[in-house]
Image 1: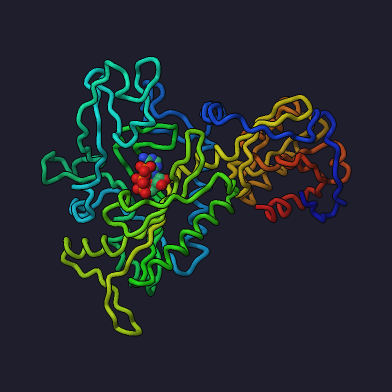
Image 2: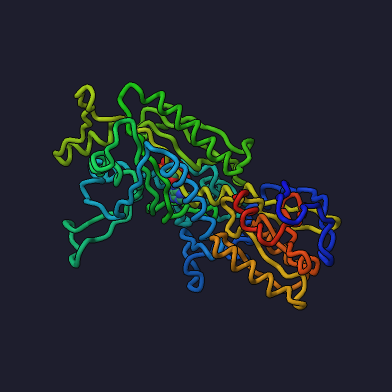
Length: 471
Ligand code: ATP
């Protein structure tokens, strides 16, 4: 960890008095099979994620983000937004409605084709996605894949539409049927010309959206991995036909680099290209970015070449031209679209799984979420070493100045300093700041690094600057 050249000469400390043994962490990553259970339990215990409507027995497919979870989720979404929209001149933001004209979903092909093959067991009445049968398990013992017990009687697969239907207005008839959007992308397509014209963009350019999407998944599960209500971070990049392959390669590389810049271990990330039989009806090429979750390699972001399918279909169904006119050449064309589509909840799960570790520190085990500081829900925790001698006053003053500087901070004076450190390690707080007696004399504090456990002394007036330069 770098020291800060503040008013007080920086130096490495052993540890503040009373902090207990805290050196030479030996990282241990629990076996994959235990990992998920430990993360789910940590999420509940520390207020990251709760089961929705828990007091009523819960809904299996929706999760609520608690105080720390909502911060983490927002930080993931904000980091994505800032890299997509704020850091670039060629991507604009948009926030379209969840409810759209029902013709949108006819044009997009979702009404006729957004289906999964559903298989039901006539004996136990359980249902599965046909393409997930090999990884599913039957309720009977011993645990086997559905269809493998003598009593199993699997029916023929039938197609099940994943869109949630509801009614617009007070009358529940066919004319008032609307859908909860299953992806944010269509809101972007129907606004393509609005955004292009008002933002005075020229092709190639993109439109980014963050927002809720809903899919009536047959088999939700694996905690927040597959849910029926989830948030998407999607960007559609409009390009001239013919340049689409080049742009696909560009975005494919950009997205992988972004995940790595968020601290995700590159050995647990890979690309998986869709074979010709796996491609969606609109796609010319598609590659997933997969992560090695405790339950196997799974997609968490898709990069798709959607061609001019969506804009052409909206032109056909709405009767409105969706063409772009090149101002230099006056050439008219319907742009091709390169899409990057990530689930924010899935990305949160990636961050949690990737950062979770247990460490042996001189005979004691500590649980650490080594979350990248940009994403960490709390950036710094402030502790007075003891609850007397004016230390709490100085510590609360520092906590206030961090909050005023918009650095999410947490004040804690309960329990031994070692326990306070452990509590923050579990929530992924990168830095713990301790005010001790020495600091009373020279107006300094110690800052302990979550990962290296190194401690430096920093002048109290320089703490904000010290933290800012690392965030
Ligand atoms: P899957 O094959 O897992 O069902 P998909 O290929 O249908 O996903 P896309 O339509 O490409 O997914 O959606 C883009 C991203 O949205 C996915 O990579 C994933 O991160 C997220 N996502 C999709 N469905 C869900 C869901 N039910 N719950 C949580 N996130 C989801």
